[in-house]
Image (cartoon, rainbow, N blue to C red; front, side, top):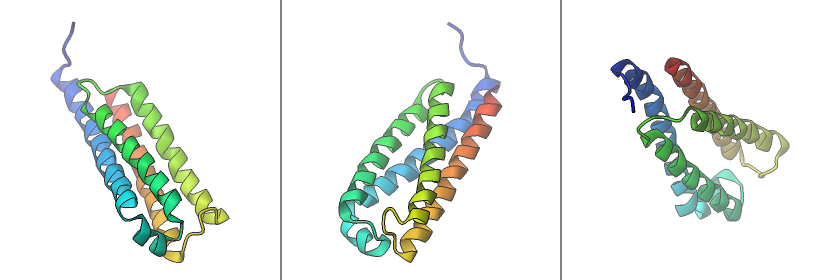
Length: 134
């Protein structure tokens, strides 16, 4: 069994850091939606049920991304799945705002677009991290 070289480990550390940051931001967001769905519903617009559902998903997704970041060797395939899901999330957020699907308030629409930009930024950084591995 071979061990990763320091160059490989150094290149992987950027990707690991980006994945870990994504996991933390996503998990904290999920916890906020779960713990404060009532308050956030008034502020953002969607009912508490969808906010709690989103919170559960984000919390589970954050844990999964955190586990991926913590692996001894970062999985390229797993990272590609995360990138794909991040892109889908960013696009779905924009669609939800544009179509009025979740009845966002103005603050909620701005929040959803800002989140979409952050998630798209994570995807771009994760793509850069994968390229560093090759």
